[in-house]
Image (cartoon, rainbow, N blue to C red; front, top):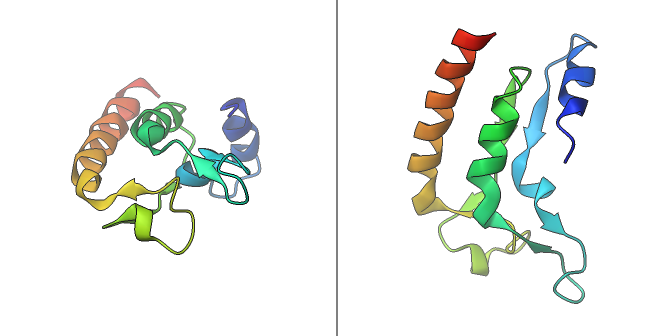
Length: 99
């Protein structure tokens, strides 16, 4: 993931949304299905917000990711959502003081 792309897309004047969970997919890593690295959702989301260019985030979550019918390997477990949202809010507030 090259975060410079956010700055370039932001120049268009259109909202920039970062798809966190899909950026962590690993195509065919689990044989015939995509693998993933959901353990990095928080770090990637915060790093993206730190660019000061985003209008939003797309993050897939599920109460039981391994039972999800799609993208099971890259989803964030739902019980981690509250902590993530709090960290995102803190980062957004910090970024506002920088930019």
